[in-house]
Image (tube, rainbow, N blue to C red; front, side, top):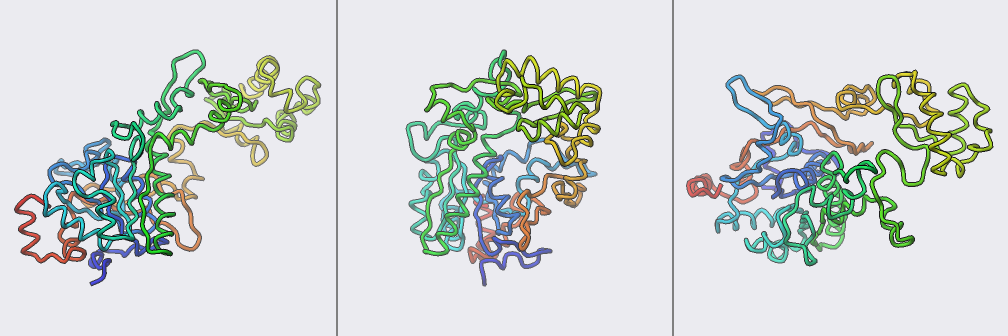
Length: 415
C-alpha cells in the first residue's frame, strides 16, 4: 500500500508541483496552517493533526457558515485549512506518540508552530524525529525562533510587529505608533516557512538529508522594514511613523479625490511629465522649481508646490475617472475597500476569489492562490476537514492500523 492510497475514495487526487509530498501539519490559528495550506494548494498531501479534546481554536473564529439545523462552520478556518485531510491524535498519550512516529516514517515534511521546547518535552522534537526519518524536513514556526534568549517567550502577531520594529514605524507622525492593519507577523512567517520548507525539501530530495527549518515571526517582520535597518546602521536614523508618506520618494502617497482616495506614485521625471500633460498642464513639467526628481524630493518644495498641485488636479474627479485618465501610462490606483477588491474584474480574471461548496453549509468564497504556475497550476478550491474526518483512512493507510486497533485508540481518547 503506498503512502498516498489514503486518497482512494476521494473525488480528486492531488496534482501540482508538490504532488507526492506528504506533510504532517501540527499547527493552529494562522502562521502554521497558512504555510501548510499553500503547500496543499500546490499539490502536497497535507494531514492536519488536532488533539481530539483541544482542536485548533480557529474552528471557533468568525465569520460562520450556518446549516439549516443551526450547525456552524468557521469560514476563517475553512480558508486556512482547505485541501487538507483531518486526523485527531493526542500527542501527550504514548500511543499517540507512536502513531505520529509511524506517520513520520512515511512523511516528507512536518510543520509545527508550538513554543520552542514543547515538542521536545513530548519526545517529538526534531532530534527525536530525525532518528525515525533522516529525510524529514521539520519546519518550526515560532515567535522568536528556536535559539536566542527570548526563544521561550509566548508570542502573537502583535508581539512580532512590536519586537520586529514594524509597529514603531507605522501610523501618523503626530500620533502613537499603530499596528499594521493585518496579521503581518503571522503572514510573513508563513511565507518564509513555505520558502524554507521547499528549499529544505529540495536538498532532502537530492541528498537524503532532512533538516530543521527555523522561522521566527520577529525575524520575518524585521526583514519587511525596507530601508529602516540600513538607515540606522549607516546614518543613525531611527525610523518613525510617516503616515502615508514615503521616507524619501515624493510624490508617492495617498491623495483625496471626489469620492475617496487614490495612490499616486509618479515621482520619476518621466512619470511627472506624463502626469502634467495628463492633467492638461504640460508646461508645469518645465517649472524650474519642480522640474527634476531631486527638486520634488525636497520636503519643503513638495509641501509648498507639488502636493497642492496634485490635490487641485484630483479633487474634482472620482477614483474611476482618475484611473481611466491614468490608464497604462501613470502609476495611479484607486484605494479600494475589500468589497471593491472582491468584486474587481481584474481580481476575477486572476482567479483570486474562489468558491467551494460545503455540504449542508453552502458556498464559501475566499481568497485564491497568488502563485500562478503555467505548467503545474495550484488548486485552491478544496474543503477544510471536519475534526478528525479522515482519521480512520489515514490510520489504515499510513499507520497500518486494523479496525480493531483504531477502535481501541478511539475508546482510549487517543484519536
